[in-house]
Image 1: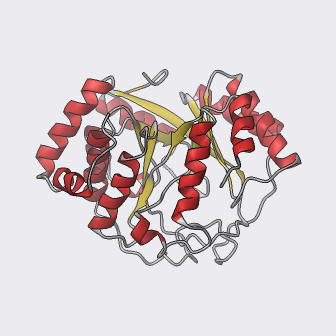
Image 2 (image 1 turned 180 degrees about the vertical axis):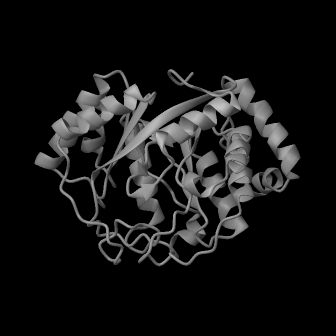
Length: 316
């Protein structure tokens, strides 16, 4: 697994004719992953709204008039039924997201640990995204049974300051390093369609593919425009950009689970098929991803059946 990619090498892969890129990505995918299997994940917002960060894409920021109501942290008794439903719907990974800049100390964090233990006891992979973590918090999450921690890089280092001013890129890298030192697998990807350049997309891929080791999970998101945020008027992203980025991620990080994340509601069935062909082998199910719309479970079931894909029991 190479972690010494240069931007020039990545650009050469990225700029191939799309059909050639897809063939190469599918060959890599079938070498390292079972064909025609997709991991089903479920993402639940366990603490919604009121985040002090100014991420320009996020409807949960307290700085923007998005209409998202601030809610308290859900307790384990509220979260566990949702995890059970997700498992019954075929999900093998359950993700919990809280709109914090930094995971808090004390009673709220203890409640998250209780929920992690309970979901892990169901036999599911457990992922959290809680903002920045301390070394101690990462260790506690590991001991509670956390499988993975999500902390996206969002975009290239150069473009990052156009999107977020309340934290710096290095803080994201520091949290990823703390998660890795705790022995938790890393879920780390980015968002396309925020006004970034092609060079920024290559820069994001370069950051991900030079992490040592690669993130075990790489979610690729399409911007879901939210009224009231600074990016609400961004133009539609060409779905071929999603396809090309996913294919490049698959080639650069062969063993990683590449997750087709936010934005599927905006994509045609044909575009989603191309994303699977490009090497995506995981989707998020359920009608909402945190606060943004997502295809209904019955739509996903019909799509997978039509494509001849089956839910993955556990990642290989």
